[in-house]
Length: 383
Ligand code: LLP
Image (cartoon, rainbow, N blue to C red; front, side, top):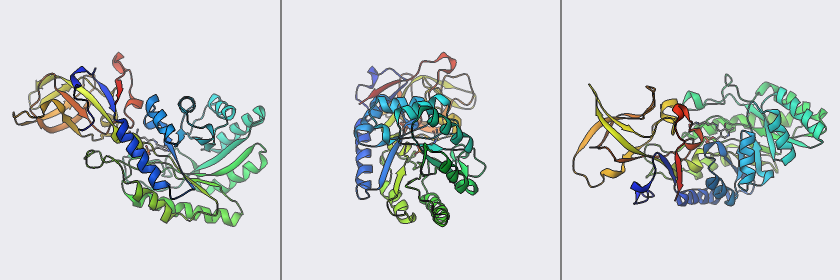
């Protein structure tokens, strides 16, 4: 892999390394695609990677921020995202988070229930601040991805049911400090089939027809995030196909005059710029299998254990070695059977002290790390 420093021995593993040049190229690709559409706005989904230097680089590039907690809102403001470009989603916004958002004057709340709307109204009244609210509508659109990261089906906990859309919008008419600003959707994550987004566009069009018949205008349409990355071949596809993605919405949505279109991309922005580096502690001969035991575990990168996710793994130390290949299970040191990065993986013959790169780990890697087993959090190097 191209961006690993030549002196990998000097790094303290397990560690994340972030390739700021690839991030810059990815941000430039996004900006180039949306440059032609003055009503397109991209908010970076901070949950994917909240490392301060990554956030600063994305803020400088001019993206807005999509936040799901008060902590993320504070991080976004601290690292330079303009407050009015911050959107705040989440099914369980706590009172302090609502208060913080109103006091800071964020761009808009993506409201997920009538119950939440009422609490926002109470806080707006007591603080005498305007609350700009979009409603997250559950579009009941299936997405072709892992069941744990699909969000737009009727049985999911997210959003307001389509049948209640007009009723909740009308409720804001009785709330002097609550301003209705639009509709929000998010159907799932790691989506590579554009048809899923086409289905979302059709649903948005149907809902807009209903709004028209009610005489309601939504100034903003937010279609969420979800664009996937190539976990199998990160070097072949370091930058996602943003053109196909944005074109899908350009073609599929029938936007009304003046409507602004918002996107909340996370993984597609930061996924490929990160790798988790880990050292081989032992090559253990089991009864039926050979195990490579590395010093990273699911506390550092939980995606394989949690979703059965595939990440491309390479042995950086084996370059030029002629010892042939072997089949290994690559496992971590944590006291749980699920602490496995790959099963039956063919790799160059491996020895203690080798360094592996677990690729495409820039999104939902560092942010999902934990201290289980009193393990230290992974270190991070930006290069
Ligand atoms: N907007 C909303 C409302 C979301 O819930 C999410 C992700 C995004 C935007 C950003 O989605 P992206 O563009 O990154 O797909 N931990 C999982 C992914 C969970 C995604 C949760 N919501 C994983 O490692 O695959």
